[in-house]
Image (cartoon, rainbow, N blue to C red):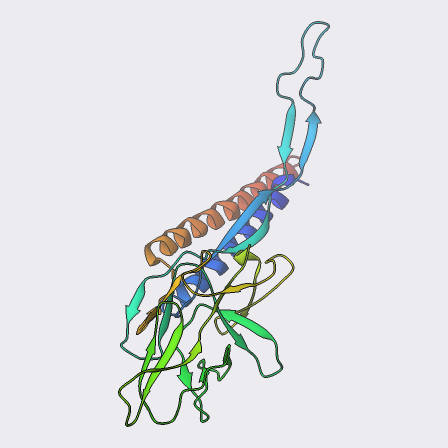
Amino acid sequence: MMQSLYTASTGMLGMQTQIDVTANNIANVNTMGFKKGRAEFADLMYQTMEYAGTATSESTKSPTGIEVGLGVRSTSVSKIFSEGSLKQTDNELDIAITGKGFFKMELPDGTEVYSRNGAFKVDDNGTIVNSDGYKLVPEIVIPSDATNISIGTDGTVSVIQAGQTQATQIGQITTTNFVNPSGLHSMGDNLYVETDSSGQPVEGTPGLDGLGVLRQGFVEQSNVELVVELTDLITGQRAYDSNSKVITTSDEMLQTVNQLKR
């Protein structure tokens, strides 16, 4: 059986992975805080018919040898944590991180999760939560009589309450960074979970120790660039088509061989 049939099939599978990743990027082009993925590949092992340096005569050697590759495989889908553009909303509880870092939140079971989506709200207790009701950590409670909320670039949260003219500090928003953010596990809902590959979370004050500053009244948009994704989609489709034509050509060659007896 011709090896090209199997080799081309690995190419089709690889391009299918790239198209799947690209499709997910395009689907989330308007998802706040979304970070695009990038499919990465490596060539498979080689069938060595003649090693480089093999003697071809008493005084000469093969300079290159003969090695035939057996295809391609997907090695990883990396998250690209480049910063997305900021969109002004003028909502007091919308917060964007300019630079490195994640907001830390807590699931109902106590699991700590991380996100770049800073579109926050308050629940029935005045606690700052995300759209799914997960509490921001450290927990911050907005007084029910607050008439103005101010969030500094360093995460300081202050409010002006009814009947007062002076702002009162009620909490401090911290951000968290990782040695290898690409090693975080994506669990959906714009949330990430720490893994052994991401390294330990390093929590700190925004603007210090390499952490980005906060911008109140802004949200971070997706870092997906449609032009790039559509280009990747086209190249992935063409590569998929090319691999399918290799299979068709190999099949036609086998058919020719089978007809030699006639």
